[in-house]
Every structure is written in C-alpha cells, then in structure tokens.
Image 1 (cartoon, rainbow, N blue to C red):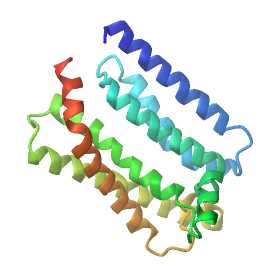
Image 2 (spheres, helix red, strand yellow; image 1 turned 90 degrees about the vertical axis):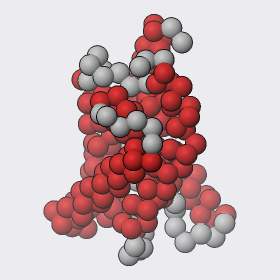
Image 3 (cartoon, one colour; image 1 turned 30 degrees about the horizontal axis):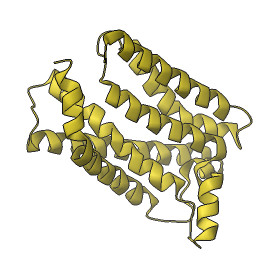
Image 4 (cartoon, rainbow, N blue to C red; image 1 turned 45 degrees about the vertical axis):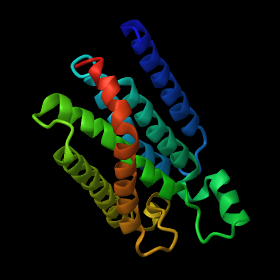
Length: 204
C-alpha cells in the first residue's frame, strides 16, 4: 500500500476509535466506571499519537490496537458484566457469568504483536524463540500491572470500584485475566507473526 494510502487508513482507524469513544461517553451506566475503564486506552492512544512521526507502527498493529480499545470503550459504557449481547449469551446458554471481560482480557494478548514489533525494530532481537519468550513476558507483566491497578482502585474506592473490578463473585478472577491475556498473546504470535513479518519487510 502506498504511503499516503497507509496514512489514510491510520486516520480512518483513529476516526472510528474516537467515534466509539464519544459514543461510550454518552450516558454510560456509571461515569466513574467509564473513566476507570477507558483511561488506560485513552492514554495508550495519546502515546501513539505523540510518537507517530518518530515511530510509526505497521498498519496491522494499529488495526489490532483499534479492536482492543473499542472493546474497552464498549465495556466502559455498559460495564463489563452488563454488556447486553454477552448477557443474552449468558442467559441463553445458562452460563454463570457475563464473559465479556474474559474475551477482553484474551484480546489484550493482541498487544503482543506491537511488543514484537518494538523489539524487532529497536533491539538486537530477531524472530526467534527468545523474541517469543521476551514478548510474552512483557504481555504477562502488563496484565499483572493492570490487575495491580484494579487492586489499588478497590483499596481506594471500596465498593464503588465493584463494576470496575467485574469479578462477578469469582475469587480467581485476576488469575483468569492474566492467564487469558497470556493465551491471547500466544495465539496472536502463532497466528499473526508471519503476516506481521510481511508488513515489517515493507518498512525495514
């Protein structure tokens, strides 16, 4: 794709993401929960915008990040345990919980492709088992860091942080979240690394 075409795609992705962000801010179930849920994504978007000229990711990474942040914005609007579609799935299949957050943490594994790209372009790591190991280690670290943020929110806000935590009575919720992000990272690397490498060959 021509450079102007690539930039146009990036602009359209940004427009879509911002549009969903604006929608999510209109009468969410709880503005406190909405703020807690969308803030990490908004910070990530700002970092990408600020560093865009110095370090432009491949279009594949921007598409994956767009999917992830849109998922977070939808969860922020309804709260993760009340997203209507997944509530219907829960009721129709007689599940114990609304699994929108489970899928969301799995999707956080998509960030592994962005991490992979940073290491390939900015370090001495080339595609190898070491690259996979280090990338997945960062995915786990980021996931654990997010769980620590949730814990701090619970300590500071008490019961008001209930919707943000979204444990739905599962005492192993944090462990599930980290495991799913890790599995998402593994599957992303296994399924997308070859495609990602083709994108990288166009800019390296």
